[in-house]
Image (tube, rainbow, N blue to C red):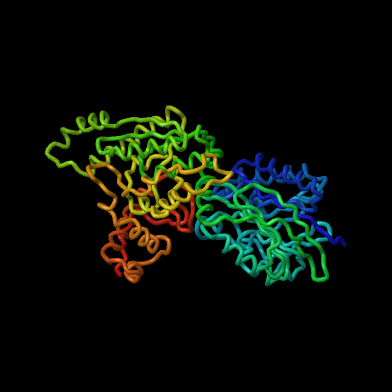
Length: 552
């Protein structure tokens, strides 16, 4: 029997629906492994289709084409190492999430996912059938167990594989990022290594898909949970892992251990990668955004430049008579620091024309929120006109605090195709601006140094839709608001929980009311990067019509 087994781990970025493109990536990975003398080349979960496919994979024409692409790939990769790739599988008229092992020009064996996740962004129970608990597959004389993603988070699949002869576990994943998720993954995988007394290979994909970013970070544990290899987060990468047979079974040979950045850097990287891939995978090349002089548009501009390069970002200042000189100077300073194209488009004439048009209808009525929203909607109209004319996708810039309580104008500043900061509370936006000013990384296309002048971060936030307006006129101060939202939204807590945390009951109830009545706005809002397991979209699904309020 062989005393050494080499696995090439391909931590790559597929595109949902690009079957031929994903197959080409798989073939390139196989070539890489063949050159390195691998026995097996491994790709992540559902790689041939991309992930998360949602209902697309249920379409017969699609999953049939995906399986055919895998069969063609098997024929193309007949002479060399085995190739393991995730994809859909039909058996007995049922659709499965499968891990397919290609050897000798054909699909030689398959593992079927048993535990189907049905929480947060995943809805696999309605899409796939659950596979049975099964045994390992063989590559040469070596028996390998492959719990698929969620299967690795439960002990029964891994234990069954160990009991039926698996010599190590190779766990393919499509595991998207949320803050501090690597710790969760490590804890589960250490448990599998300890329980089975087998090496555990955790292989994850990278890349953005709609709101989700798959952050890679693949790693290998030896029995007992000792880390043998750590691949980088977010980057496409290969690793050639050697396993050696010992008196106590297979052991992974120590390899490189990439540095894992802190949560601030990972959050920022997610926002950059999500925008970069959303653009690249949908075909857009350039973006534009309204640059107001405030902190939210400033950080979105920085993210856009870091993702796409300054030459692909247009910033537009759309001042009214309520826009302060300070905001004008701040916006221009941010644009210059980032090196972007900067347009100045006053809205006063357009606003006057709209006011005149509506004057007969509004005669005798006091100006108020309607007039404020006209400014926002006029800006939205102008930005969308520029988006259409120049073929540049409009970015929207509302943070999670505003998205939560509806402090935004639908068909106005909510206009746009993508929102990089949709899942970041305002208090965290401030700190992220400071982090970006102090840090630069090779994956950032923007300049080093201070790109957001301190005044943008330090001044009181204002929508500047009326004289001397401050956000705190309409909302609790952001530290208080964000803390209440964390309880109500992120922790799914109650008014009683807010009171127990020291917040005023009436303030908490008002915030809760704003969250519920703003559901219709979120339903129509742009997608944005997911940073937490309580992001607005697939993580949190509430009815628009809803009269319930917490009576506590």
